[in-house]
Amino acid sequence: MDSKHWIVPGLLILVTLIGCAVFAPPDKMWHDIPVSDVEQRYPIPEKAEYLRFKQENLSRIHRLDSIFTMEGIVIPVERVLQQGSDWQDLNMPAYALPPDSLIMNMILTLRLLQEEIVPRIGEVVIVSGYRTPEYNEPAGGASRSRHLFFDAVDVAPVTDIPERVLKKRLRKFYYEHGEEYNLGLGLYDHKRFHVDTWKYRNWGDWPGEE
Image (cartoon, rainbow, N blue to C red; front, side, top):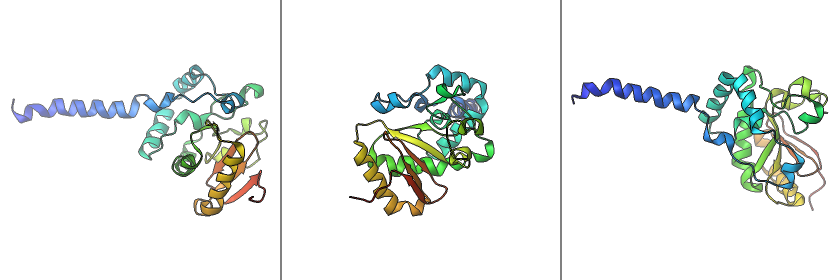
């Protein structure tokens, strides 16, 4: 066959591949979270609930996932859209989408989490990402919580790392590298911790190093 006869089929294949890359649900979406005492303490919505939310916001979620992929973020999009682990108690939506103007705010925080923090403490699950003001207030969040600006996550490990070891490693990273990342690090009970990249500061369980 003459080479020119391959041009149209080749273009069709290319368009199909690009379409699949942009619009097909990524494999990482349903990454199974290991069962642990932390997961039981911080509930994750059923997959069907996220699928319903995704269907209602399909184009915006595809766009967000495409941005994550281009930026090298492997953390599933649905994790940063879960408002918190107490949505049932608050009778509030489990998921919410940030305004488009805030989307890029999360990239530095997730890159820090996956490239610097996870290698030091093991696999984690995000239990609170973006929050609407309507969710944040009854959840007890600060009036200017960084969750409202889509650059903060609350996280818990899914490994059996002891809480004392977890916090010691996080504090060590904060003292050694936190300033260069504008790391905001809050340490809470039951292995939960907050990460943002807005401003260098710390709070919560922060005793002197032993």
